[in-house]
Length: 210
Image (cartoon, rainbow, N blue to C red; front, side, top):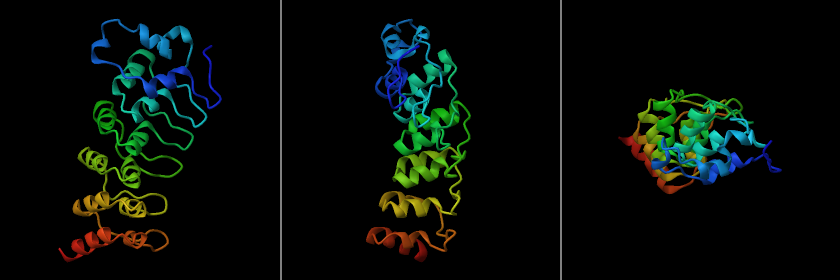
């Protein structure tokens, strides 16, 4: 068996976090260096071995934008693209957090992952995760892939609530320009009540007046 670190990381996790796979390596048999990073079947690592947070090597590759590594894990090691971490989040959600737009397109358009799939513990969609982190480009990418702009979490918070709570000016402005309307969450709180940022409040005013 391969060695595992105290945090549950095996060498395959490390490879997916740190390594990139040059396009010229794919299909030409030059895998010797990757073998040293834990991709050799003789290392006996499970395709979906998990660290202490339930994260698989495939998730690590996706959240770091290493799409070629993720593809290798799928084709050579039958990794599961919809595996969930300890919070019920999938690779799609983790890619939304880190703003990996190419990886998101790969998952949704290439693998058919549901763009509105929810993390089990939080009921957040990828769009909500992206808004929470202020990943404006990723919000735009997800919407272009058909994400529901009106999705809400278990507390009835919209992407506007999460963007405003994080004081993300550009993301809030983009959501408003995309037609998302402010609404109350389960406590009766509007998104604009979660910020005192002058630029964000001005964008809300402009939306109301337009």
